[in-house]
Image 1 (cartoon, protein in one colour):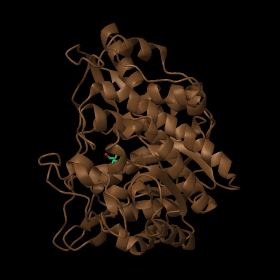
Image 2 (cartoon, helix red, strand yellow; image 1 turned 135 degrees about the vertical axis):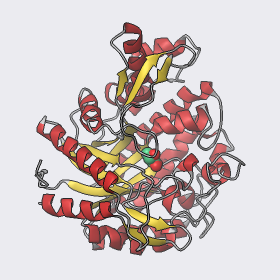
Image 3 (spheres, helix red, strand yellow; image 1 turned 180 degrees about the horizontal axis):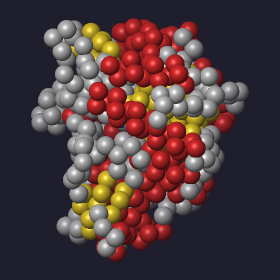
Length: 447
Ligand code: IFM
C-alpha cells in the first residue's frame, strides 16, 4: 500500500479528547462538581490514585494545544463540553465563565481552520443531578435537553458538528451497572433505565437542536461499536456473541434508527426482569432523524458461551495475537466491520470519532518517543477506513484517540493514548513519532 491513500475531498482528519480527561481546573471559574470529581476521591477506584483535578491543564493551555493541532495539519477537533462548567448544579443559571472558555477554544480552532465537533456529554454529569437519581431518573433527560438547548443558542453554528452523547453503553454499564466508572453504582437493574434515559435525552436534544433552527450545524450521536465474534461456529458460541452484539451495539442502533429495541434483547433481559422504562412517544423521540453518526471502534472481542455470566451468558476469550497496553487485540478490520454494521441501519454520513491505541511509550534519554507500534496501529486502521470507503461506506472523517496523553478513567494516568506525550509533572507536551506520521499522512491526503 502506498502512503498516499486518496481520501475523498473534504475528509476530516482530526483528533479527539474529552473534558474530564484533559481540562483540569476542576473547581475553577464557578464550575460545579461532576460525578467524576466525586468518584475519583473514593479510595481504590482509580488504578494509580490519579484524578482529573489538573489532568493536562488544557483549561489553561488550550491555545498551545490548538497550536499543536494546527502544526499537525488537523482540519477537525472533537472535544466535549463539561456540563457542570455551564450549569454548575445541572440547571438554572448558566455560568458565563464556563461558557467563555468554550468560546475561546472554538475561536482559536476557527482561526486555524479547524472544524470543531463538540460532544455535549462525555460522562461528567453534574453531581447535583446524580444526587437526585442521575441517569436512572427520567428527569435528568429533561435537564440535558435544557442544557443542550442553551448551548445550541449560545454557540450555534460556530460548532458545525454537535454530538449529543459519547458511548452511552459505557455510561450505563460501567457507571451504573458494575460501578467501575462514575458514579460508581452497582445496580444491574439500573442499566436499561439509564440507557433508555440517555437515548431519550438524545432525542430531546435533537428536537431542541431543530428548534434552534441553525443554518449550517449538524447533529448526531457517538456510539461505541466493536465487532463481537464467536470463538467457534458452535451454535451456543454464535448465540453468545450475538447476545453481546445485541447488548452493546444493537440495543442503541435499533432504537435510534428503527424506533424500537431489538426483540431478542427485550425477551432476553425481560426474563431477568430488566426492562427499559418506555413511555408512550419515547421511541418516536429517540428515533428522530439525525445528520451523522460517530463510531468509536478500537478492536474486536471474541466470545464463548458461559452462563456463569448471568447478564449475557458470554465470556470473553483473551486475545492470542498482539495487543495494545489496554489488552485489546490489534484487529484493524474492526473499522470495516463496525462501519458495515452501522450501514445495515442507516446511510447517513459516518465519522470514525475515535480510534487509537495506548502503548507503554518509552521516553528516550534525548526526550524523543519513537512509538512505532502506534504508527503501525494507525496505519493499518486508516487503511481499513479506506477499504470501507471503497466498499461504499459514506465515511466523512477519522479522529485519532487521542490528541494528547490524558486521564484514562479508572486506569488513571497509567495508559497513554496520545499522539503527543504529556509530562504530567511539568505539563510539557512532546510530539511522539506518531504525531509526525499523522501530520505527513494528512498532508498527503488532504484536498
Ligand atoms: O478514553 C476513552 C474515551 O473516553 C472513550 N472511548 C474510549 C477511550 C479509550 O478507552
